[in-house]
Length: 619
Image (cartoon, rainbow, N blue to C red; front, top):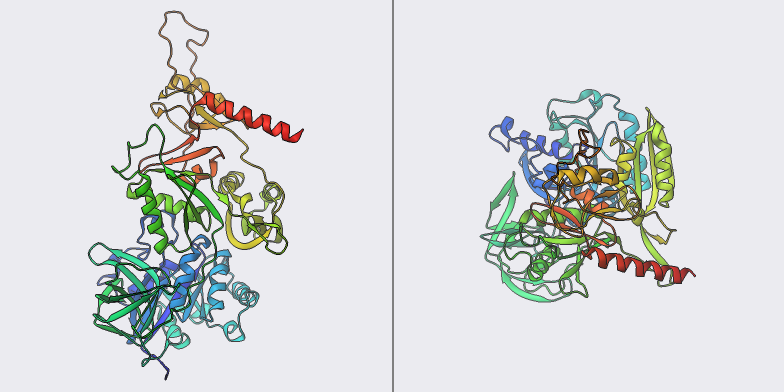
C-alpha cells in the first residue's frame, strides 16, 4: 500500500512540569488564532475546565483542541504534568507526531518533565523546546538550555531528537521569539516552528479504515463517545464497522456521530481521512485500546502499554451511624458503588478495581495517593457516600530470587538552605537514599530514592518541617528489594467516647490532650476520631459533657479558659492521617475519620489481644 504525508495538519502535545505555564501558553495560542471573538473576555486557563483542576492548579485530564494557522490545522493535546496521571499521558502521546516541551527559564527541567519526556522520546516524537518566562528575575536562559540538553541525553534521545529547535517565550503575555533578545509581541515564531519542525502524519489512504480508542467521553444525548486518531483509510458517518477488543473479541456497529476538533469545541463532519484526531459515537460499549476498523480487518492494533499501579485502598459502603444523611438517596448501596467504580476503569486506564472477600468492599489500585484522592473527590461531588481505608503499597515477588519487591519513587526536593538538615533526617529514617544535591541562590535541590511506603503520609510532615515553603515532587522509579522498616504515624487519635453534641465546656477542658478536628456544636458518635492525641496511643474522651448547674463555685470560677481553633483538614490531610484501624467516611458534605470497630470497650479488648499475641511471638 502506498503511503503519503499530509501537509494540511499537525498533531502535537504539550509537555511541562506543574506551574511552568503550559495551560497559559495554550490560552495565548487559542486567542491569537482568533478562536474567540473578543480575546480580552476569554478568561484564563481555558483548557482547565474541570473544577478540581482549577482548584488544585494542575491538569488532570488530557484534553483536545485545534486551531488553524496559515491554512494548516494544528491539533493540540494538553497533557497532565503530574506523574500520578501518567495513564492519561501514555494514551494521548500515541495520537501525536511531535510535542512542545515547556521549561521554566528559572527552574529548568523538573521531575514531571522527565516523566512525560521519557515517554515522548521513546515514541520517537519530534520535540520543540520552549523556554518560558524569559522575562522573570534571575532567568537562567543559557544554563536551562544546557540542562535541557543534558536531560535529553540522559533519557536516551537519538542524535536527531537531541538537535531540538528552541523557542523563547513569555507565555502569560503571548510573546515568542527565536532568541531571548528578539522576543516578538505575538506567537508567530512558535507557530512557524511547529509547521516547520513537526512532521505531518504519514498515512495509507488506500488501506482499510483503522482507529484505536485512546480516550472516552460521555454525552447525555449521544451516549458513549470515543476519541482517537485515524491510522489508515477513510472514516465516514453511517459506515458499518467492527469493534475489536485487545483480547480479539469482535462485535459489529455503525458510526452514527462523527466529529473533529475545532477551536474549543467539536465540529460535526461527514468523513475524515487518516491522520485526523476525531470523536465518534454510535457504539453502546467502548473501551480504551479498542480497535475500530472496517469489517475486513481481522486483528486488533496492539494495546496501549500502561504502567502498573503502585498504591491501593479499599472503598466500601458507609456503615457509620451518620450513613444516609448527606448522600443522594439510594447512592450508598454496594451495587451502586461497584457500578460507579467499574465504570471508572473504562476511561481511567491506570486504575484497577477488584472485588474483595467482603461483598460491600472493593480494592481500588492507582498510581499514587493523588490519583486515588482525585477519584474520591470526584465521586463525593457526584453525590456518592462511602468510606475508604488507609492507602497501602502493592508488593511484588521476584520470580527468580523469590525476593519481595516494593515500589520506589524518585523524590525531588527544593528547600531553603537552613532547613536542609531537618529534611535529610526525615528522609533518612524513611529509608531514603540521596542521589544528588545542588545548591544555588540560597536554595538546596536534592534528589532521593525513597520507598513508596515511606512517603505515605509524609507530605504534610514535610510541609510542617519547611513551614509550608518546601516543594516536593515524586516520580515512579521502579520496584526494588524491600528496604528496612519505616516509622509509622507518630501520634494517636482522640476518639469520641459516646454519641452526642460536642460542647465548648468539655472541649476546653480536654484540649490539653491534643488538637481537635471538630468545633463545638458538631455531632459525634462513639468511635469517631475527633482529633490528634499528643501521645502515640489512642485516647477515648467524652466531648459531649456539659457543665453541671450548681450554686457551688469551683476554684476555676472566674478564670477565662479559651478553646483553641480546630485543625482544618483537607481530603489529602485526612488520607495521610488515617491509621491502620481507621476508615475515612466520605460524603458530599463531610469528611470524618472513624475507627473500624466503633464500640470503645470492644476495640480495647481487641487491642489487648493483639498486644498479648505480639508478646507471645516475641517471647
